[in-house]
Amino acid sequence: MAIDYSQLIPNNVDLASDRRLQRALENWQPRFLDWWKGMGPDGASAFDVYLRTAVSVDANGWANFDYVKMPEYRWGIFLAGQDPNRQIAYGDNKGKPAWQDVPGELRSTLRRLIVTQGDTEPASVEQQRLLGKTAPSLYDLRNLFQINVEEGRHLWAMVYLLHAYFGRDGREEAEMLLERHSGDPDKPRILGAFNEKTPDWLSFFMFTYFTDRDGKYQLASLAESGFDPLARSCRFMLIEEAHHMFVGESGVQRIVQRTCDLMKEHKTDDVRSLGAIDLATMQKYLNFHFSVSLDLFGQEASTNAANYYTMGVKGRYLETRIEDDHVLTDSTFDMDTAEANRIVRKTVPALSALNERLRNDYVEDCAKGLLRWNKVIADAGITFELKLPHRAFNRRIGAFAELSVTPDGKVVSEAEWKAGESKWLPTPEDRAYVTSLMGPAVVEPGKFANWIAPPQRGVNNQPANFEYVRFN
Ligand code: BYC
Image 1 (cartoon, protein in one colour):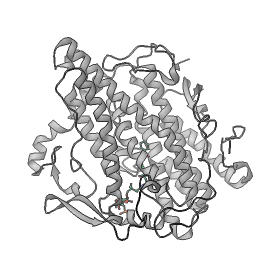
Image 2 (cartoon, rainbow, N blue to C red):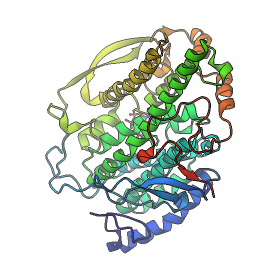
Image 3 (tube, rainbow, N blue to C red):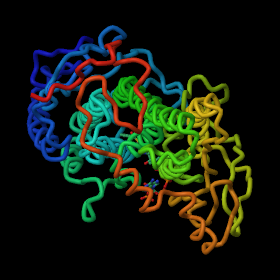
Image 4 (cartoon, helix red, strand yellow):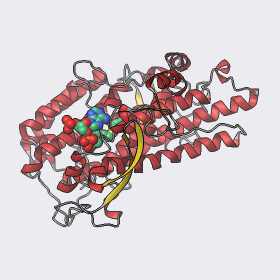
């Protein structure tokens, strides 16, 4: 169904036919806008930004570019097309028609998953609120704002589900999504990584590479949900998510490129003296963002995850392409876990290991970007390799939280770990150095901050000196 842009809330769910729901969402809309003005990109309301807005959910329609003032961006409700014959692909309900409404017994489970997903979206906008002040170029500023408005829309996607399918509880949860705030000691966001700071652009690119990629895997699992409106919402969100990860991957790559260029040109490892970010510091930021993002997958052994699967609420990554019985009651899974202060390999029931399985898919995907970054380093003739730390390193959630593990996977005493920490994770000094590079935003079209290389290509094939943001 085409998106109806004549409505106050653009949508492709025929909102006009349900007056109650329409009114409830129109009531939430000004609250969302207040939140955006208070917690969204700081001081950027009057800017004209070259943004992509979806005008339909099909291949031709979701990438429509024009200048928009962000508070006027048409946040709306867009679900991917419906397959009327869709069946639940796994668990006890395998083969039954997908649910168009929420089964009573799954109400609180589904609500909780939707709230957890929804909570991350505004959280990331809050985390990135101040980054516009130090953007390394107009190109990067525009990408930041594109991500921010789309995370806002992803919040809309979950709020629509809460309002449409969860009655009064859903409406209350939708209010709470605007009341919790990233890092707020009294009302923090639900998941750990979303209460961390994103104070500089190296953190931003690492976040969009590693943490948005958790988004990809969680959304892909929820896109397999038996609850069809959730599955269709997530399928459309995934299309937008791809750009966010591209911004992260290409952003880190451009920093690596600039650093390598300077190392070669000046025949030195000391790029800090040249105002760039050394590779060792990048490795520390990588270690931090990867480990924090691994925590987002939950416990290795999880009865929650087993129940979600068995009930048909949350599937595996690309569930329908996997060749097995899709019930998993007789299957096992091999994974690392912690026992008696050691990392041990165990064979466990596959159902209880679904979080870990998804984490495996994620880790494999994360490694691909490192291959590209390392190619830049190798092509420059520099002997250095960025590495993913061991998955037990620096964990707060799951079996490894109780162990002290080095990035190469060695279990050490707490004292040894503390002694090594400054080599593995960004120190206050490293953070202060990176922050010191974040000068006032570079606003001249085609110009870039000293510590990052230009992109290979412009947005929507625009030329290098394109004016992506007009400040007015
Ligand atoms: N922090 O059985 P477990 C994105 C809790 S990112 C705090 O493993 P489960 C985005 C857990 O709640 C994607 N608490 O739990 C990216 C549970 O509590 P109870 C976001 C945690 O449910 C960038 C207990 O520990 N989407 O979209 O299997 C920018 C037992 O754990 C954490 C989703 O996460 C944690 N990290 O797994 C913008 C999808 N981990 O029951 C956006 C929806 C676990 O004991 N969420 N706990 O009170 C889920 O599927 C699940 O909630 C989780 C947790 C995978 C997160």
